[in-house]
Length: 403
Image (tube, rainbow, N blue to C red; front, side):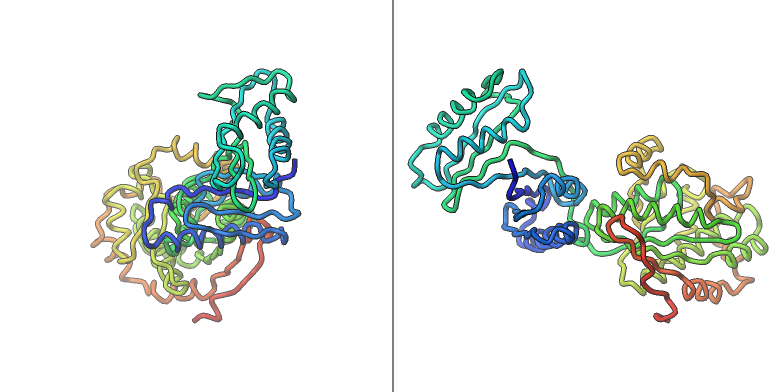
């Protein structure tokens, strides 16, 4: 049995009021982008549901892609047939056989949206159910809790049948809530923070700090691979790779050892904020979890945040490490994150970093160096890569053209 359309059900979008159309339109755009290599597909959105018309495309290939699109509560592959009870019965039997295993139960749930159809709802249930029982050995009926629920919807233009419901990723369509810059390291936490931020409808661009020769090309490739995993949920992601060696060495030489981590985070935040401005982002995103490491105490966050008034989103702030690891495994970033390639957050790590730094002290230590000039140089030399849907990355632009 070949599907000819997929019915998509909204989740949280359904709670929206007058601006619901904005969210449904964005979801439609994201689905079209995710299925762009299937030219026979078309998408139509209504207030309550969205239909993906498959044409001659293979619906089974499309299902895995839909499961990664935020804004979808669930979806069902659908077969459309003519308004003829014999065709309805044959199509219904084919759908039930697709999911049938010995011992399973089923029911038929008919809905007659077109009251001109000659059979009433109960008559459709009886005719279709009887046909399926006669042609399926070992199948029984359970009207309260069936293993297979065959939905039959009779409309003016035809009859729609479905028997499978696939869960979606829920959340809001990516891009419906603006754009933010994700500070992406090579660790476990920041990719999870990016995933959860996208789930709330925020488009993300990633900012990674690279310090050669202290960090290797393999560490850089690790972050590109993490971005590829994230791009599967959004269609594409821009990755900004910032040269950070000169700033990091200067901090190491000029700032007292127990304050180097605080100063390093401050410089990263300043750079990420400048990139946000140039790309019209509205916020910064970090993978910080309260109390997890020295730089993630409230006192550290206050001293680090002092360099910007931009909102900083911390989706993981109240999670423990095991919760974060569970999500990382679910989104398939965990095994990449634990590869043993150091990033600039782990090099030059002091043995006893300050857990309650004073912002006045770190400001004083930084005042002896013209960090602003170093920051502008790093921003200018930033390399930008656009990664499409988990596919191969391609160089898109350099900040040389923007400054």
